[in-house]
Length: 175
Image (cartoon, rainbow, N blue to C red; front, side, top):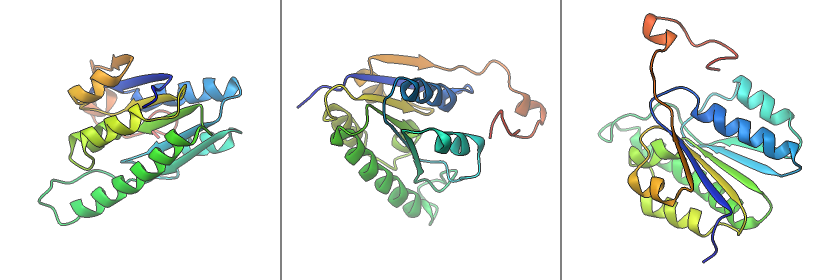
């Protein structure tokens, strides 16, 4: 079993988890590293983050999510679980390939916390990544197991957000 080069985790109820991960991806590409980003929950491929990442040579992004995750009792929960499993397959291939120096698993913490993916499966995949691969995990509700495997954990805490006052999501800020 090889040890990943680094595992970083961005969690919490505050804004900026994906933004921090994408900033790391930009930094990696700027250093000549190839990056793969898998978005587990998100399903809107018209956001600024998708457009900008697609312009970066050496960066790839794929969305495997279906949007906001309903409760397990909702009939479409199974569709979300299948989408997460598809993302997990893509992530596993990317982490094991040695082709990518950085793999970002955006919203993977949510996928685990909501029961779309098993915590131990994700931990095993991260632990078995190609040596020296940088793995970035994001999402609210990081489990203790995901926190334990990370070398660096940052919690974004919401102090105040304009959306609480009725502001709509804005291009360049939330989209």
